[in-house]
Image (cartoon, rainbow, N blue to C red; front, side, top):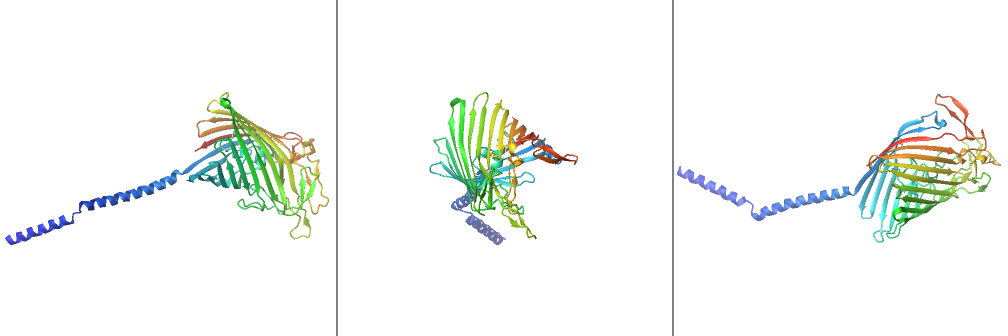
Length: 458
C-alpha cells in the first residue's frame, strides 16, 4: 500500500511539472496579444478604406409629380388633363480623387427611362482655374444649365427647346474660371446631331443611335460670363454664347427660309447651323429679394433633306427633299419676386420665331415650286413658320428646403396668318366627331396650359 501511494505521488508530481512546463512564458503571452491587436488593426484599416470610398459618393435627386390641363382643341381626341411624373432623377457623384469627379444621372420617368448625364470632370491642381469635362452633359447655355429643380417656370423657353433638344450632348468641354477674376469661360466640342431627327427617303431616322455620330463634322460651342458686384444692391451677371454647327447634307439642294433661294450642294457637303446669344441675370436685394433675367438668341438653323431615290418595285423616282435653312430669333425675360421666406412669384415672357424671313401674312402664300417635281419636291410655308408668344405665371410655395409646390399657367399666343381660312386644320372632338377645318390660324388658337406640380428633393 505504501508502494502504491508513492507511485501515485510521483505521477502527480510529473503531471504538475509538465503543466508548469507547458504554461506560456510572459514573452509568449505578449506575442499572442500583439498578434491579436495587429489582426484587429488590419480589419479596422480595411473598414476605414471601405468607409472612405462610401463617403466619396454623394446621392441626390428629385421627383416632380404633376397634374396638367391643356386647353388646346386639337387635343380633344386624346387626354387633355392627366397626372404624370415629369422627372424622376437620381444623381450619383463620386469624388474619385482630389480634382477628379464622376457624375451619373438617370431619369426613371415612366415610359421614358433615359440617361441624362454621364461625365467625368478633371480639375487642374496647379492654377485651380481650368477643368475638363468629358461625356454627356448640359450644353453651355444659361437656361440649359439652370437645373430643372430650381427653374421658376415648369419648362424651358421655346427657343431653347427648339435649338437645344434634350439639352444635353456628348462631347468634351474646357472651362476657365480664375480665382481672383469673376469671369467664366467655356469651350465645348460635341458630335452635333444630338437630339435631332434626320430621316431618309423611307422616313427612317438616321440619327437613332445617340452614342454614335452620323457624320465626321463636330460642333463647337463657346460661352463667357462676367459677374459684376453692385454692392449692397445685389449683383449682375452678363455674357454671351455662340454655336457653330455642321450637318452632313443628304440632299443635292438647299432651300432658304425665304422660299425663293435654292442653292446646289453636294451629297456629304457641310450644312451649317450657326447662332449667337446674349444674356443677363440681375439679382437685387430689395423688397425681400427680386431678380430679372433674360436672353436673346438669333441665327440660322437647318434641317437635312434627302436625295431622290428609286421607289421600291417601281421605275419611278421618289422626289428628293431639299435641305432647309431657316433664320430664327427668340428671347425670354423673367421677373421673379420673393414673397416672404416661403413663397415666390415668377413671370416669364417667351417669344420664338422659327422663321424671321416669313411673316404671318406670307404663310400659305409664299412657297417654293420645283421646276422638276420628279427630282425635287415643292415646299410651301406653313404652321412651322409662325412665331409664338407665351406669357407664363407661376406661384411657388416652399414647405422646406426639400419640398415645393407650384401653380403655373401659361398663355400661348400664335402668330396669326394673313386672313381667315388661309391656314386651317381638322381635329376630332372628344365624342369622336370630326370637325373639318376647325382650327383657323387666321386667329389666335387657345393653347393655354395649367400645371400643378409637387417637387420633392433629397
